[in-house]
Image (cartoon, rainbow, N blue to C red; front, side):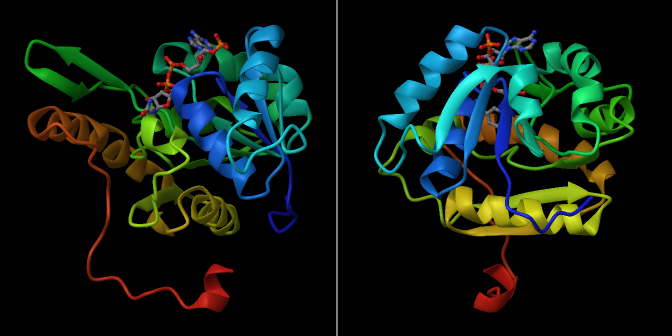
Length: 233
Ligand SMILES: NC(=O)c1ccc[n+]([C@@H]2O[C@H](COP(=O)([O-])OP(=O)(O)OC[C@H]3O[C@@H](n4cnc5c(N)ncnc54)[C@H](OP(=O)(O)O)[C@@H]3O)[C@@H](O)[C@H]2O)c1
């Protein structure tokens, strides 16, 4: 799989807040984005709404079904609720073969004590995706970016780090470039795909902090060198 070629990006569940937010930021950075939906009309409608936002346009954003979106792209962001994750990936496994998959799904539960990470048989949603998609290259990223911030054209997200996990180094490098496009800040190689077991439930901590301090907390690591320009270009 050649990860060096710039490609169209599909977003499964692209009509939801997270899919819309990532799609908008990627389109604004100049990527061609296809929002996928279970309903073609909803995909088209949401894409038209996003295309009207500052910096986006109908030339960089369109919407369709999840399957058609995958077929039109070679990078696919998975932004559906964990409940529908396994079924959708199973359904689209053939179309996803040979593609780079970026899973941002956080399997979370909520009870009277607040948010918590769900136990996932495969270890994490990203590992579940890898097991269901043996012919795709699966990475995890974008777990900690808050959708309302992504969707707000005036919010600068360059102070947030996007932690990328995966077992294919070239794929991770490519996702790091996408992360930089989404936030204008850093994408960081956080290690192997199995570390999604730590990254996904960390979102429960962020939600808890958000509730306590009435904010939208993100993730930023300290102690890292500033990435040289030529490496992050
Ligand atoms: N919201 C955030 O701030 C945030 C931040 C980080 C990560 N995430 C993760 O990103 C994912 C999406 O979050 P979200 O808030 O955008 O979720 P959402 O609004 O609940 O769902 C996103 C979209 O997924 C589709 N969908 C819903 N149920 C589905 C099912 N059973 N099977 C297939 N598709 C289904 C819907 O699109 P159609 O009806 O058009 O098909 C929906 O618009 C979640 O896994 C979440 O953990 C969210």
